[in-house]
Image 1 (spheres, chains in turn green, red):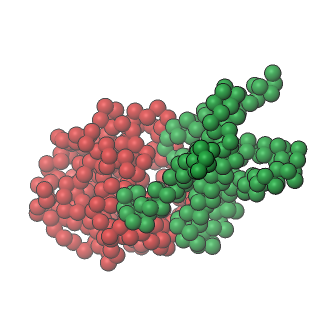
Image 2 (spheres, rainbow over the protein chains, first blue to last red):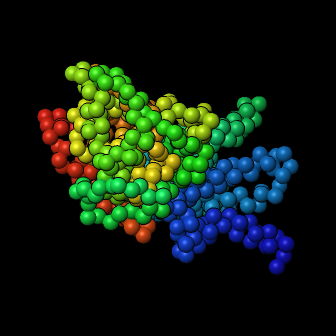
Image 3 (tube, each protein chain N blue to C red):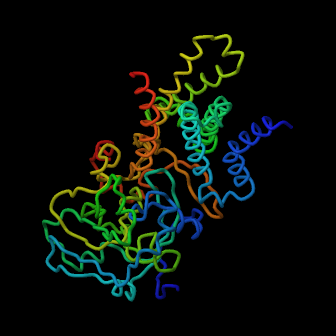
Length: 192
Length: 268
């Protein structure tokens, strides 16, 4: 195994750890996750999706300041964001609402909290579908335009997070500040 | 330690009782933090003893209610109630305590006493949730009931659960239980009870009036703006969790007469 391959696999496995650990605990010791294990898995998957989006957005600024470690993995990190978002969606439909169609339809038609979350997943789906190298070649210049969708995606995800906060805004404020920093840096560079 | 001299009376249910382990480790008590495991995690930072509740307002015999009075009371009873959280999880829990109405009568509420206000403890040094600067809610936690709701035989003041004194995380040493309303109406760690003439402003109603009404009766027909209230996740025995239909008034139909002629979609 070349060093490059080793590095690739290490990053791949580290990124999968939240999923692997969560699944392992759910199968063998669900109570260790919490009193309501599904709720914990639901929250964790959602939060990891958001974190991977943020990590993906960090790749280019890091490269600009000379940290190139993550640069070869930008696609993988983005796909992990989609992976955890899908896991979040599946945990919600299967685990949380027990595939109850009435609840599902009510949720995606009437509740901004849910349909904005769903919309962000759809945007991530577009990004995931257009991420293979073949698609990059096929879309040519348009690829960059399509992948600008990561900006509305992160904002939608943040609104989804904000809408679920009940008593304290701390979590949404912290993530909001990070998003503002990452998007602000790009905006400033563009203006200059 | 167990609470002695408890009478076991009829208010109960044939549904499986939630494990004590679960009921004491999964709940909302924002004074300790917003996570559902925060109350159990930080409960030991709070020392509720000694304790007394001051009873005041529109009544002829204001005074104090001490924890000792309640615990040695001959009328302590155990009741098994369903507890339905507004977030759509629910449990079945045995509580030890006293009917609220019988206690309130001691203080002789007068004719202007149309509502009863319950105020919970404020101790920033012991309750880390009260130190959260990003909190949407103001302390003290205030809840209220209409006087006829408070006097209803189901309204209960608990000093224990599962035959033991109330753990700090569940509202030690004295908490309210109004089983036909969403859990947040059942104030914890109460320090003041006040009889008042007009409908009080209550904590969650102030924080988000569209989502949390003054009445907040369990009502499967009135969805929360962010989720359905038609079903709930019941945490039953042995940690089993199942989604079951939610019942009107949480299954306590005997309170329906309190709301005769009221549009419960408007007065949610």
